[in-house]
Image (cartoon, rainbow, N blue to C red; front, side, top):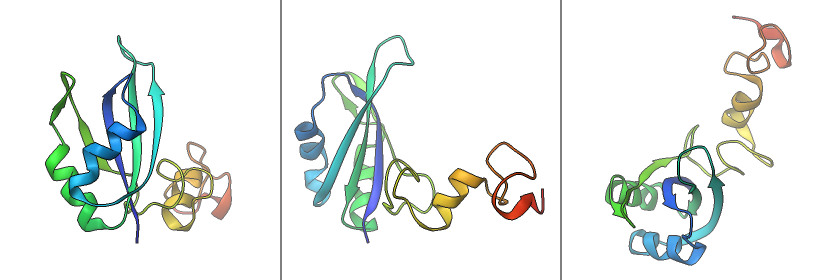
Length: 125
């Protein structure tokens, strides 16, 4: 089953091909999605990379987390939830399963940030 690995703090000019080359020693990369992040003093990119299995994902995280690329320390982690790629960044469009529902409705069933509203009526809040 595929895993989704998140790579943060990439330079603003890094390409999909460069991200694939960065992860190639750790296994086959199924897909790469780059997103520009404008929140800091200097724009960066975040890559969500789908790899074949947890073994490849863990190897990439171990090898790349904290490693410098273009003078920036990379932050590499598994996507929120259980780490399996189920669509989007940590439960985006097309996501399925419990982790996707939790990202939309909150962990206890209520809509995220709203007590007693949404699926499950907010029981247990």
